[in-house]
Length: 126
Image (tube, rainbow, N blue to C red):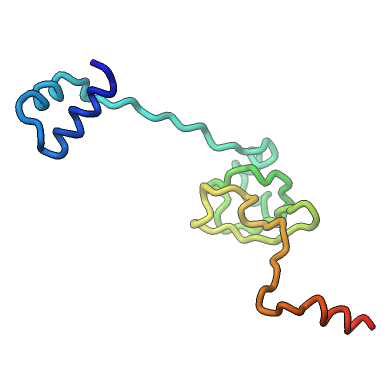
């Protein structure tokens, strides 16, 4: 059976349109759905060593923004490099599974509440 026909049958069965034919075809389908495999979390070699002893991670500078935060790193403070400076970050349970780079912004925010901010800065310089 083609995948498009299968989808039509399953859709009709879901909507309750088709009767015995859809049920008969659905019973012949393999019941186990394919398991979706995910990539393992990326961890830099430096952080992999720290995984075994989290005490070594305290107040360390992390250059690998693409590394994943592991549960072993919870309740420790690290400094994450953003390309220019390091930003201090406390790792909590909510940050587990995210990347270190998500918590060290690389761009400055623009203040939108003062449209003439540049004009005021120029006046202050003069």
